Length: 433
Figure (cartoon, rainbow, N blue to C red):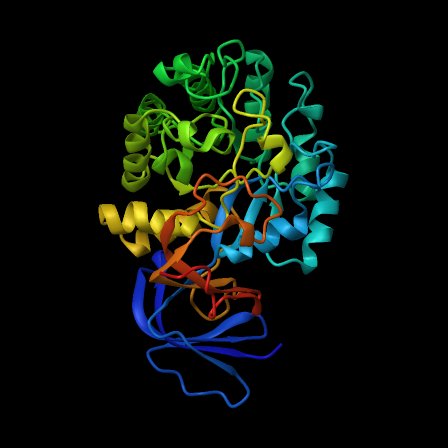
């Protein structure tokens, strides 16, 4: 593997409190030197970064790659290519595939297949067998096989006694539980947010109450059991407030904000239809503002995409019948750079912390830093270079993107995985403006 010398980069590593101009050398898959101006190595590929940001690769704790069972939507290979295209070097894949990832064999199979792909996959294991909500999986066996968390994402374990037992057992084996919060019986038709717009469209909608009830239950269970609970895709102001109060009491709770819940609201459904349908749904503009501020303040710990590919035919079924979910790996960085950094003064270092360092800490993934000896899982991006979203050119198989046609900041120029360049977009020209 040829050495790579990154020259004239802005090196950002929030864990090291690093934000400096300098060079970085990669040899044999790891960072071998960092300095203000490194001597050129004769055999190294020299990359003049021109002041672009070089940082640890992004990490997404919540993606759906649909493999096995629904590979017409996405495969592990295309999902990893999309991740690399967006600057991600690690993702956590959800368990709701066909078959459900509820056995050690399926965890091991995913890890083995992933060895030659363009992004590291850390699989989640199911909480209940077949996501049926009735019988717990073998948590210890899933962890030994390589699962980094437990989740029935897409569904909520409705039985209080069973989920309390799950939290006790998860605490005993040391795995976090990543929860999709939606109270059974309160979720309505899951088409969109329940409110004035849903009434006008003749839809029942899903109220914020359904999400908030389960957040309250799950943080209370975490408080009682000592388990680590990670609340997925928080979408409401009250949900944010519940998490903030739990953190103030010392509960081991973390939460994620998705770009769509930060930068869109329920009115987007009127323009984008089923391509703005997800679970939990887009809520009010006030809710979106609350989620943004919670991410900035640290009440919510990470940005996650909930990358959920579907086919055009499925989304063409319309808002009432189409499946929930949108894709997000290839737009996440640009949306956050615009919506948080450019518009709200959030620092680049803080954004890298929310999108790289914090996700690794929460699920105890192997650390990556800009210092000698660290795995060279890196991303290079130009925070000022503007580009226009064209979903037809994405690496993902899917096109269900409500941001299509938007102009964003932050072009990913390169993604490096273990010292190997897996994405090179220095000549990227997707309708650059």
